[in-house]
Figure 1: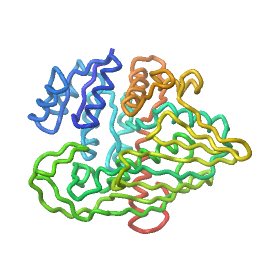
Figure 2: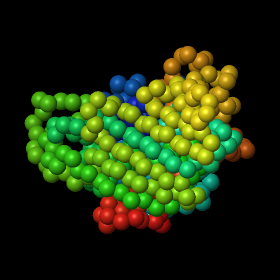
Figure 3: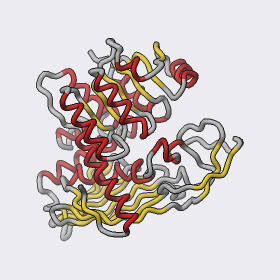
Figure 4: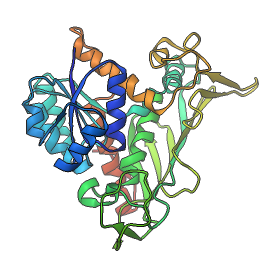
Length: 376
């Protein structure tokens, strides 16, 4: 039986802890940004141990797997320490700040024979896996054109603030690294298409923000804090054209400043025979478009969808599953891999993380040069 530790106790770190516990796996302890916040989170989450640093986790013989949900800039150093300590790792995306750093982590994990996973959890809605099964079975023909968007509004106002707005913590990219990476990965997962080159235009819509002088949790709004004006350079929104290796084309839109859109990931994939479309706001549905016969709506039901999709469904048809279940579905596959002697990697790992970083590196370069950029 595995025992876990978690680095990061904010919004996503808490989601990780809840999902781990739902699998019946014990979480020994956590590490936050300071001793005070670690103690506070440990009390709030009923954790037995508060770690003082990453090295203590890496040397803890009770723990065999660590979830890394800390700010992006810390991933490379923390994951390196954990791998050298012999720990299996599930890391939030992005894996690192650059593809070069990601490649180093991939090589280290593989050289030590450790399980390594990247938290592209949005793949694990059952109907996303169902879409993949339809494409794989040739039900839509060959994919030819993709359109997608991932829109939020939580950074719309100049008073909205989060660590992702700080370059030293998040890196140069923001909306693309934070949510665009999920969308582009999910499209590639469903279609099997590999990105060849990109043409990108990144936008800083809110050019000055009012930064609170105290700590702020993700998705919280506190307009009473003392603030200072800071200039912004990272992307609030982006438009990206994509050329895939098989000749297919894609157009994606990314925004964290779209009023009313709380967390909308959607895409439509057109094939030579039919099309499929998905919207995370209605995660139980998959639209299937035809020419010449009526369109279809496929609903999540473990008894009617593909066996791989059904693995991610924990409730009967008609019982809605959402964001939290995607983490559990991903983690069950990773933990099953750890416990198995016949390992099967059927989840996103560090190799997927490197691919994602190559895409986002190319997007950043393309926006600066205003030209098409091929992936390294």
